[in-house]
Length: 194
Length: 234
Image (cartoon, rainbow over all chains, first blue to last red):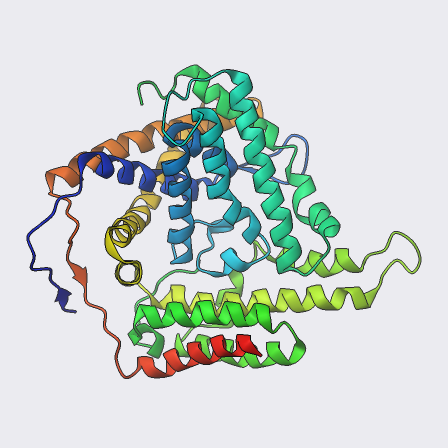
């Protein structure tokens, strides 16, 4: 196959942007890898995956813009065939399927968590009070389940109530564990000096 | 698992932009015509797409197993009643049609994934999204594909180490936190190394891309996409 060569002079990408692109790409890969990691749930038969936790962490560590962007990148890579959606599935179908609402909610939720934690669009110190961290993630959880329920109702042509009981209710309690896990990560300084 | 496989089917030889156009138009048409007639017509198109990709519907279905409980539950829950007659089959019709629509979109999307390598998807994105946003998006998508197996391995190692130390007996939030923190640390380290490597190699706004070009064989695909989009008006 031939190559489409560019003949103009080479224009380098700025250092800060290179760093942000690298982090966003790695966070998107972490989000995809998280879909393969599930734990038995102590309070329900539905296993708990790491994904929503990665959404929270993206908002906390990368801020609203790059955190939301990295999760949007995860959706784009998955849509183009990276095996990153539930159960290692890939392609456009999950993005318009029954769980599409959840997928589309993730970048918005990461941005919301980032906005609340960093108190604006600019990235600041993520080591804020526990109440603010928890509040940010509760707001993120509300976004995830609101989109998820609406998406299921629309895609499957069912009422909102059926959608909530079929696709949302059983998953909500486990979110408390993810919020606790994220608070633990921020408090432990396990990710020092990022 | 559904993934790219080299081959020389018709769909392999199409421009990736044609295939993206057909997919998006097909999904839109599916949502606009969720009627028995509409779905039969779209079913024919979906079968044609699988045929053009040399893909078997059975293999494609195996990848859909995560969604099958939702597809089946939708109609059942909607038709269930809390009193006599307990079950209203008429209420299940619309959700059942919606489930069929998801299935058909899935077949068409599977044809894309099976026949399009990452470098072509990246080239298509970079040409469809103008300017530097497109370049950054294309590079980032390629990086996600590249790093996914490495990050998966990182997470697997953390979990193995955790299991070896009886960490699986810990509370769920502690287990989640340990695995996520391990994954996060390694991902940040990888991101720093990657950024350094990109700068050292003069990461530029005008990289060399594989050539993709519309050919005569793309014409039927583009016409199909146009017809599907035109059907939205009716």
